[in-house]
Every structure is written in C-alpha cells, then in structure tokens.
Amino acid sequence: MTRRLSKAIAVWVLMAIVCVGCSSKESSPQVVIYTALDEMYSSPILAAFEEKTGIEVVVVYDTESSKTTGLVNRLIAEKDRPRADVFWNNEVIQTIVLKEKGILSPYISPASEAIPSGFKDPEGYWTGLAARGRVIIYNIDLVKEPPQSIHDLLDPQWKGKAAIAKPLFGTTATHAAALFAQWGPEKTKTYFQGIKENEVVVLPGNATVRDLVVRGEYAWGLTDTDDANGAVVDGKPVKWHFPDQGDNGEGTLIIPNTLALINQSPHPEAAKQLIDYLLSPEVEETLAQSRSLQIPLNPNAKAPSTVPILSEVRTSAIDFNEAAHQLDTSMRYMQEEFLQ
Image 1 (tube, rainbow, N blue to C red):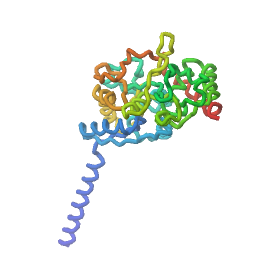
Image 2 (image 1 turned 90 degrees about the horizontal axis):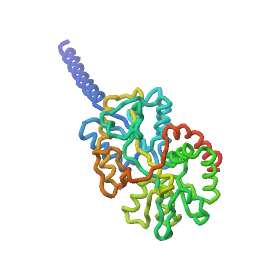
Image 3 (image 1 turned 30 degrees about the horizontal axis):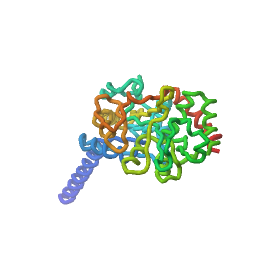
Image 4 (image 1 turned 90 degrees about the vertical axis):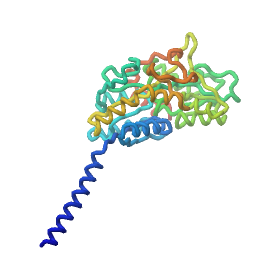
C-alpha cells in the first residue's frame, strides 16, 4: 500500500505540474490581428510591439488578389464568434461597412487625439493613420508628356496603353466607390464605360499595374504611392505624381490605413494596447521612412523630406461615409457591367 500510495502521489504531482504548465501557456498574453497592409511593412512593426510588451501577436494577412475584401468577409462570417481582436485595414470604406454591420467596437485611443477629425470616426469605431494617395505611374521611356488627370484614361491617344487594378478589391474598390459618392452613379458609370471603350486593361492588383508599367507593357496606369515609390526606389524607369492638381482639378484621393477594435474580441485589453502602439508617431514615422512612403496623419510624426506633406496636396473632397454607402452600388456595377 505504501508503494501504491507513493506512486499515486507521484502521478498526482506530475499531473499538477503539467496542468500548471498548461495554465501558464493558456494565460500567456496574446492578440490576434487581421491586416491588409503588406506583410513586408506590417511585420517588423508588429514584431517590435511583441518585443516591447511581451504580448504574442498572431497575424492573419490578406492576399494581393483579394485585397481587404477577403478579410472583411472573414470578419463578417466570424461575427458571432470573433477570432480577431484588431483589424488593420489598408483603406477606410470597408472598415466603415464593418462598423455598420456591428462587427466593430468603439475605442477612442489616447493616441488618436492628434489625428485630424476627417481621418477618424467621431464615435471611435476606427482611427486612420499612414495615408496613401492614388497616383499616376508612367514609364519614362514611353511617355514624354505624362497624363495629369484620371480623366486621361478616356483620352484616345492612350487607347490600349493604360492600366488600372480590378475595382473590386483594396484601394481601387475604394476609389470607385468614392467616385460614385463624389460624381453620382450616372456620371461614374459613364466614366467607367469610357474606360472600357478606350481599352484600358484591368489587372489583378495595384502591384501588377506597377510591374507592367515598369516592363513597358503599358505606358501608364493608376496605383498607390507605396507601389509607385517602391519602383522608383528600385531604380526602375518610372515616375509618379498626384493627379488632378491644377487650379481646376478635382484633387487626389487620399486613403488612410484604419485601425479598429473587433466587437467581443477574445483579448480586448491586449487589443487596445496594440491599437495605442500602432497609432503612435513612431509607427507612422517607420511607415513614412520605408519604401511604402506612407503619409503620416499625426502631426507629431517626423517624416523624411521625400514624403509628401498632406497640406501641400490638393485632395479630393470625399465623404468616406457616403462612399461606404455607395460601395454595394459600385461593386454590382463593376461585376455586372464594367467587367463583362
């Protein structure tokens, strides 16, 4: 009996040690973030947060072909049993859609105070950072007098020589919905029909537009500042600029990244810590200094001289909430008519 008792005690002690180990592992701090920002830019920042706080960051990225849309659909599908804590979107309109569907929870970070009001939700459901612009990229070997407006996609001299990304994903979907909000449905549909008639090629993503303009397969196209600047940094034969900057120009669409807390997230306190960190001036400085050349929204962030100053750019007057309301109309039109 003594031997049996000793064995029983030993087994009990071993099980207790194992359970303590399991409990420790389960209670270790963790935060889950879904992000549409390219991994090459977001990964080092999230790693720095891990090192600084000791909180493990579990990251789910999107793919270039389904920019943002795939993650948005996943968040909607997981509404009743959320797995993510934070959504780091590379645009704003679909973030607003998530707010309207009850996917997000309000959180006004102390770090958001310096962000301009036009780039954050007044109720705290999302906050913007690190903006990008929709720009014209052109091949300097093929283009001597570069186009100055998005309306130049309709110019017969560029028939079959220009490219855009598919307007169903990412910032191109945002741009299309913004035009529906700014111009109204009829004028926007006429514009895209003109694009179709002028044989503007539709490519899988903004990076593909950049790559094919670099290779000279197309003379120019629309992309984002991060993709365009990467090609310039690599010494490719391209330049880029903001469209519609003249006195009578409609201005360039500026699109912020957005951060949002997921409603009923599994790790809300760690999520708030992560949001606070990502909204810090230091993070915007990091993104501005990278090849993505993202424009800080926090005036306390110090950007290199090569980064555009937002106040010096003629920006388009877009109501992001109205653009979000136009998203379904825009998507239906693109799928049913423009892309057929």
